[in-house]
Image (cartoon, rainbow, N blue to C red; front, side):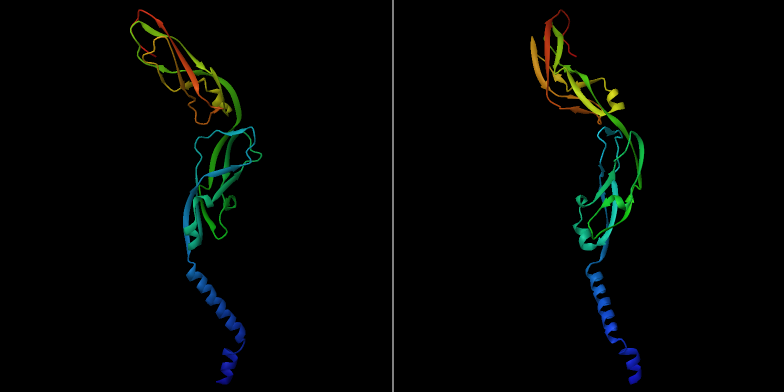
Length: 225
């Protein structure tokens, strides 16, 4: 019996005790810090965009990032802690497909990325174009009998726009918000704003537009434009 205890119980006793303690410690870590998963929806970030390039796709998907880690870290996680980054250095105009992998995700150290949706996405790029376009005022209203609109002016009469070349080239003019000139008898001025319909085309240095409506006498019926 003594030989049995010596051979199978006390042999390498120190190592056995250490192994038991390590196993017990791991068990405590696992039971006190259970593993959990969650999914976070975050925008895709574009870095190092060439100066002369514009994204010409209206719809850019968000990334659905599934992460795994200690339950404590999962509970504290917010969308601001996850970053999906695409490096656009050297990208040229045209259609481009990008792969999304865990290497493009920055997440807290305790967490691991286990899934990314979509795994690929497709967007288009175009060179940036800036040009000047006219401002077209929109005037509505009803006027006294014998009066009509003789002339409408906008100040400034033109604005600068910027965006993807093909989209900028399609813009003919900017339009002001409607101005109601009802009751104007001689001359009336209004402050409004101009806009372009394409969401990817920006107004450079946007500011107020002053619309002046000049009336004249006529024998026609009251009306407006």
